[in-house]
Length: 485
Image (tube, rainbow, N blue to C red; front, side, top):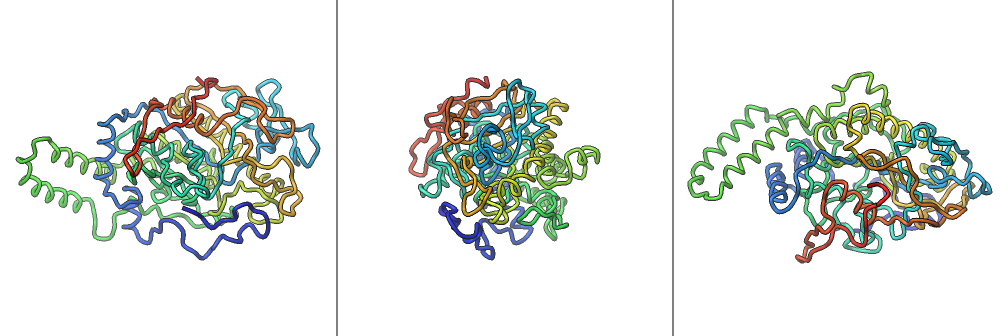
């Protein structure tokens, strides 16, 4: 699938191809549509069908949920490595950028001055400064979310078919509780996320925005004062709990006529899937997890009122309830992403000072608050936190007629991790003096995927079938990061 976004940002306004009046992706026009899409993926499966599909996957080799989970903070647009985790304070201004640095808890390691909270607890983090992003792009943002360089939608028409790491975890690890979906995403734009692809719609992410009340932000990050409706768990008109039980009872009467012919127990299994579906809708566990209003006011205040902070608080609640993989699309706008800081003369992206500058303190707060909260609740050991985007930014500022913007740069990017019972308090890899090329320890998308699968206990020789029945390995030319295990 190809998207009508500026391919290289070489000239003109950044929203020249935004098509603001055009509906994109999946449209939920009513409550029934949201109910179907949110509980059954976007393929029209019923929830019992979805549960049955996952059960079948488990019977054919998928493991039972281990209690491990992962939260991906997706910095849509591509954050600048030089102005975050890989600063070069001794370089000339047009290379190093406008920000200073701060000393971290790790001797000799500095990061951007706008990340002081992370600096103070960097012993709980791993920074990777040598991530090879060659081949990655955005709109769609698929390469790093799939761990496969072939999942680049601008060069490969089959890119959309490569399954997300979260989808493969959903299939081969499953949820940590049967009443919860395994893979959940807070999505700003369909082009920002990878989906189930070859695995089928049953392994698409559960779209969390349909299930909870959250503030609505405009494309430049202003709180509009409105809230989402959280219609997913509200019964459509005329449908209530007694009617659901009545309908299930009627189905059971019809099923009884065929039960004697069933030698393999499929009818009993179908009943169990229907029961699980009813419990997910009515039983309260999922509803409770998505009900952010039930969180103590002191905790909500600790996280903060910002949309991303509230989403991250919900991510913690989802992990507690049994979700295995949560992705947060950290973007206000649905084009290339809020971290796409090309220049102050290119709204709404902005450049390094006015675009990235306000994002970093917010990110510093939400990341460290989340990690601290997980640790205090005893959840950090089994929750891996990953923060990254799709590529880095150019070593030199001043792109697209701006004075402080940076263009896309795929030669290298930085990212960070915390938790998951892995070894932290380290920096992996290094870049050349200008921060533009890898000097030590290249880390490829497939290496990150292999690391995540090993963490979840998914065998690295696992494969899935494409549409022609050919096996495709979940990891191609990648190995887990030995430094973390």
